[in-house]
Image (tube, rainbow, N blue to C red; front, side):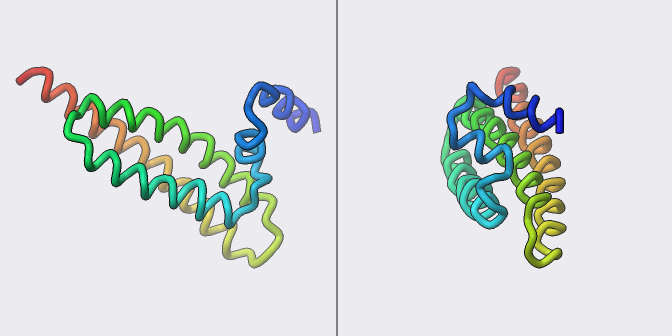
Amino acid sequence: MSSDKESKNAEKGLPKFFGTLINGDLGLAKTYWLTYLLVNFIANILIGALRSPVTAFSTLIVVLTWNVIVLIGLWRAANKYSGLKLWPILAKIVVVFGWLYMGEAFFSILLAIIKNSHE
């Protein structure tokens, strides 16, 4: 109980939407389909279209920050989900792969910047 209170106190400065999202109160379906899948689909198109690795890296930092909030919220939404037990299990698998993908994407862009700065 104490951790819930501390969590809510730590998030008072966040806008209401972000607090709702990170607490998993947006719901499992909305959190996955809208804030994770749709936003990442659009972000991947944008990052792929950017010509400058530095600009792509800057955009990626914004996306990574967004994904930290979304992945935490998705995990928490899965914990709160009361429907078919398959969905929260699949959601948590997506979260694990999401963290792995974010790490890989971060280092790929970073290596591209380093490579381009030495040419």
